[in-house]
Length: 155
Image (cartoon, rainbow, N blue to C red; front, side):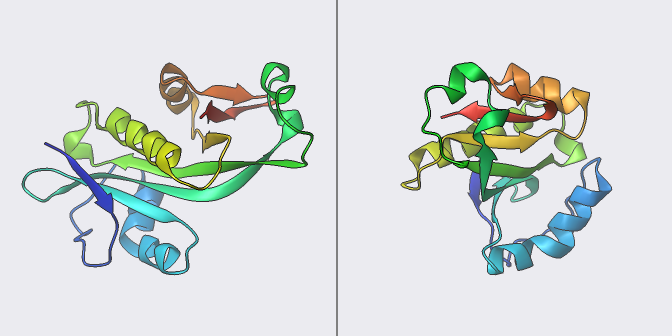
């Protein structure tokens, strides 16, 4: 059973290793400072043995109305920026890939944002490549106009 909880600096991050060195570096060296400075929130997934199997980060962002598909943009007020939440990083330890943990983390992030009292139109992601883009699209995300690797999930 996987338990997802808010990051705190007592969490042992040393054994976490995913396939992306920038994400490993961020999680092992930088995340605690971002959380402390309130630049992002981090949530970690632990298995029953207390191992960190994955994590994700959330931060406030905004999206220009003209980047949204017309079908969505016409329903919104003509504000310069529409409030959203950025799912900035999402990673699964390589020892636990192929078990659906990326999906579990993504669903938890969307549900967490939906439950929040802070208003947001959508959850935004910036896919690192086409493979990541396909993963997000399978989960219901839509690409922004002229920015195919930036996607949103309407809340």
